[in-house]
Amino acid sequence: MSSKDNFREHIDKGYVTKGDYITMGAAMHEGETVTDAYVKIPLKTLNRHGLIAGATGTGKTKTLQVLAENLSDKGIPVLLMDLKGDLSGIAQPSPGHPKIDERHEKIGFPFEAKNFPIEILSLSDQDGVRLRATVSEFGPVLLSRILDLTETQSGIVAVVFKYCDDNKMPLLDLKDFKKVLQYATGEGKEEFKEMYGRISSASTGAILRKIVELEQQGADIFFGETSFDVEDLTRIDKDGRGYINIIRLTDIQDKPKLFSTFMLSLLAEIYETFPEQGDSGRPELVLFIDEAHLIFKEASKALLNQIESIVKLIRSKGIGLYFVTQNPTDVPEAVLGQLGLKIQHALRAFTAKDRKAIKLTAENYPDSDYYDTAEVLTSLGIGEALVSALDEKGRPTPLAATMLRAPMSRMDVLTSSELKEVIDNSKLIPKYNEEVDRESAYEMLNEKIKKSEALSKKEKEAKEKAKSSRSSSRKSTRQNPIIKALTSPTVIRSVLGILKKFI
Image (cartoon, rainbow, N blue to C red; front, side):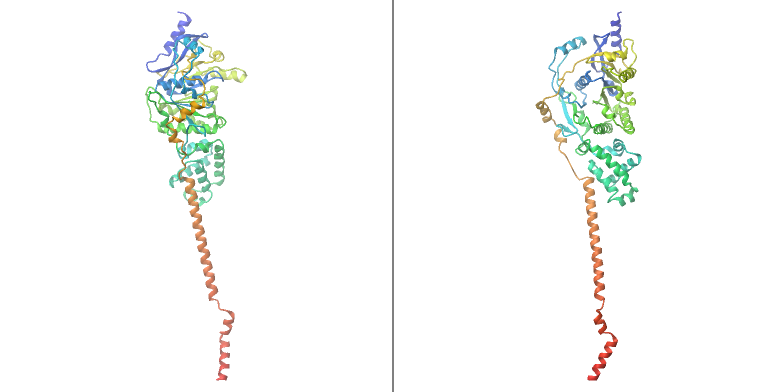
């Protein structure tokens, strides 16, 4: 048996599946594509998370697109983070190209052009379904971690939440939260001291500065109502295909704090909302986080621990997380160790640091008799990648340098008119795009302060009136000095003596 035949048998045996799967492409041997040596990802393992990595221009976004399309085709909803603005073309079928036909002929897999159902979501003022969450939904622990607060400051945040719960004051937006903090060391200082102990104005000042920093990245738009219901991410269209939800994030690339805040709130909400899935054989929802390093950039240790915990636990809810980034070293080791599927596009070795990163990356993949992993990493072409997955029993599949299939949908952005049509046909926009500003902690505390001031003014006026009344009373009872002199006993006796002489 030739080396190529041995290789084909090695791949066929390593990627055999009993259940449903997604075909990613065909394995390559000595730089040549081995037709029909399919690299298949079992649906059963797609909640074990994954990584798509590689240098700029190597095809990461197209790989993400292929996975999203095939998941949708299998009836599995998808959420995509579109930071570069080049994923909306999924709504239109591919126009085709001779190079696509040539690629698929090598793979031995027929090409089919298709469009897919999409929903455009937005974190900012861009067109699309508005994503919001309330401060209450975050809770004191997650909010403290996002703000990177000290233990003392986190305790104050917990007290603020407790006060609002006790007094039935909804914490909806950052305006509410700031108002309660100011009240705790201002007009409500004595009330807080009596109920929860003294609160330091220096600590509340530090928390307020952290909130202002978050607001400067656009979080004031994100916090509020109507809150987004994560169940709306799991919609299926009339043809049984899962919706591909695309969050337009082109205007927040320089706002990592807002991005990580949103991602953590979303993952926490999904974890709290979705039921335990068990071994269902397919995921309920798959999330692709493009430019994943933005989540971990400037993240505190507490925040990283929160992310690691969610990654470990959320797969039991049938949720798959896929991080897309340039280098695997952008993702913390604790998270990287939880990822079952790794699709590694080419890396470039321009510096000593690059060569070191390539060596570290190569060590994250299974050993192979057919590849020098570090060498292959620098020689892969566009649309080619090293693939390592998990089989249906959770074991790593053979490492395969893979010629990846092309996306079935268009590989560019929608035109303005096409985008408008998608947004106009959305069933979610009427539900979420009307901004609601109902009475909450801000208005309730302002009313409380107003009533307190009015009462104080009334009491002050009453005291002044009483004082004035007492003063007036003292004046009226004091005798005039002339009258006092005229009515003295001596004067009266003298007057009587004079009157007797005349009588």
